[in-house]
Image (cartoon, rainbow, N blue to C red; front, side, top):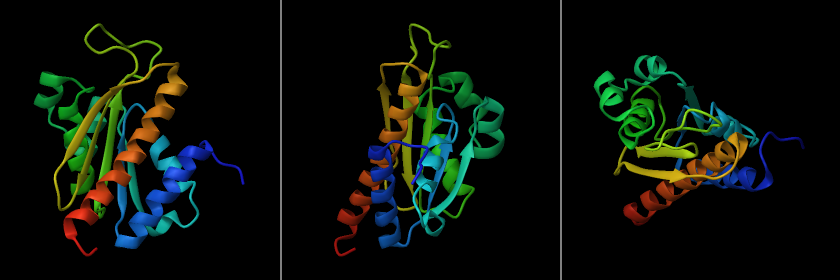
Amino acid sequence: METAVNSATLDLATRLGALLEGRGWRVATAESCTGGLVAGAITDVAGSSGWFERGFVTYSNEAKTEMLGVRADTLAAHGAVSEATAWEMATGALERSGADIAVAITGIAGPSGGSPEKPVGLVCFAWARRSGPLRSSTRRFAGDRAAVRQAAVAVALEGLVEQIAAAEGASGDA
C-alpha cells in the first residue's frame, strides 16, 4: 500500500479513525502551514469517509477570514501565527462544518518567513470540540520545511486523539 505519510503518522491517523468511529464523531481540519497534510494523513486511512467531514486549507489571511471567520482584528493584533488565530480557525471549522471535533494549524515552516519573535519552525495549534474546552499549544520544531510540516501533522493528530480521550473520560461511561 502506498501512502503519502510515514508509518507512524498513518498509525496515528488509524487510531484517530477508530476513536472517531467508536464515538460516531466526524473531524474537520483547518490548515495553514501544513497545506492539507493533516487531511491527507486522515484520508490515507481506508474508511475515513465515515469520519472525516472536511478540510479547510487557509494559507492566506483572506482565506482564514473568508472560510473560517477569523477576525481581521485578531490577525492584526496577534498575527496569523498565534494561538488566538488558531483558536478562531478551529472554532470556525466547527461552525462551518458538521464535524464534532476540529484541529487548526498555523505556523512558519520555512525556510524563510521567520523573525526573532516568530522563528521558522514555530507552529500554533488549537483543538475544539462541540462539547468541551478548547485547547491550544505552540511548539517549535527543528529541521527543514518538510520536517517542520511532518512534525506538525503528528502533533495535530496526537492532539485530536487526546481530545477524544478527554471527552471519553468526561462522559464517564462513553
